[in-house]
Image (cartoon, rainbow, N blue to C red; front, side):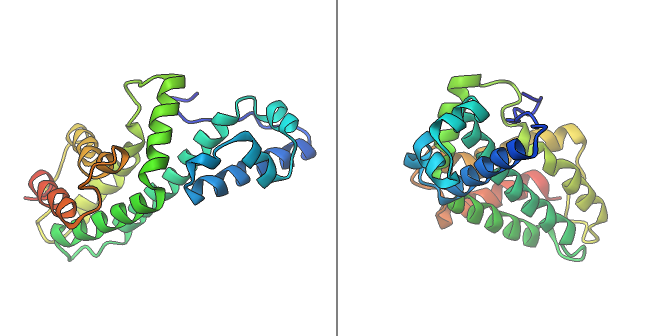
Length: 207
């Protein structure tokens, strides 16, 4: 595994093997996007991809890893949506407008992912690989785009952060916004939750 705990599969040399792997990965991604964790199984994957259980075992080794990979792929896609929001944000608008938009994107993504998928990943992945010090480092991809946004904004409402401060604050964002969904907290996704996130991020990020 890489530093960022990403699941990777060896690149097959034969075209037929490449097609098999791509078919299995694509099928796993479609199953995960449907967000029914009861279907995160070898049989469902084999049926969806059109391959035998033997082929799955031979090509993937651990079938569970392919679902981890698919969840990670979905998470990367959603993080890219945050980055795009930062890059396209109007530099003449204040931080409150940015946070309203950012939190709405985040909550929309959480509702797509569903708490069940997040809990599946937390429970199964940590059981297999442990909870390492960099388990939540996936959020770090947002740091540089956000710091660039702070520098470009013309409203003097964004507090300029150091790299280390931004790194720790973005971990706080996970606790405030994401983890209530992962933990199936009753407040998750409510207007009260949204306001708690926005007001606390204003305290952390605004001048």
